[in-house]
Structure formats: C-alpha cells, structure tokens
Image 1 (cartoon, rainbow, N blue to C red):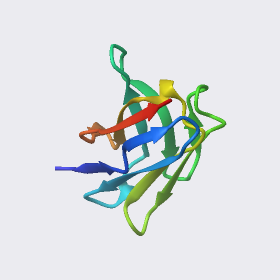
Image 2: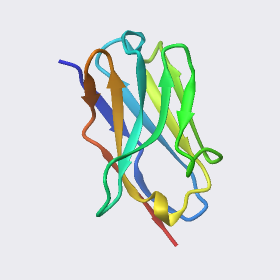
Image 3: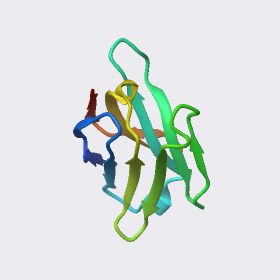
Length: 114
C-alpha cells in the first residue's frame, strides 16, 4: 500500500511563501508522474503542478509564474514551492502519484489571508 504524506501547509499572508512536501512510502522513481492538486471550498479538485520521472514539469496557468515543483529521489519526496501567494490559492493541497493507478495523500490546508 502506497502512502503519500503531505506537510508544510499553514496560514500565510498575501504575497508570502510556503513549501509543501510529499513524502512517499516507496521510491518515487517507481512513479511515472507525481504532483499536486488542490480543492478550494465549493470547487472541484484541480491540477496545480506535476513532474515526471524525468523531471518534465507541468503547471496550471494560474500558478505557472509563482509555483515550482521539484523532486528529491534520495529522500523520496516531492516539493511544491509556492511564492507570491494569493487569497485564491487558499485550498486543501493533495499530493498525487501515478503508477498504473492513482495514489493520493490526505491533504494539507493552505490558507492565505489579506
């Protein structure tokens, strides 16, 4: 059973930064792609960013110039660096991995206040 454990969420003011971490229970090299989704109150879950095994990244248009995603294979961890945070970034952020099936973390709350 694969476990993905997120950390790093919290409360931050507009314009601030946070770094989310997703620690996997097995080698992240075994996943074709990993990434982050988010769900804001009243909204559906949406893609934020993904990174492939070879390091190819993909971002939602709303975060492309502010967020970055990276992976540390030695630590089996994927990171989401979030800069210039906006109120509309407030959401529960979920770690995701794909390896012939979808795997999800439990989520971590990010709240951006004015």
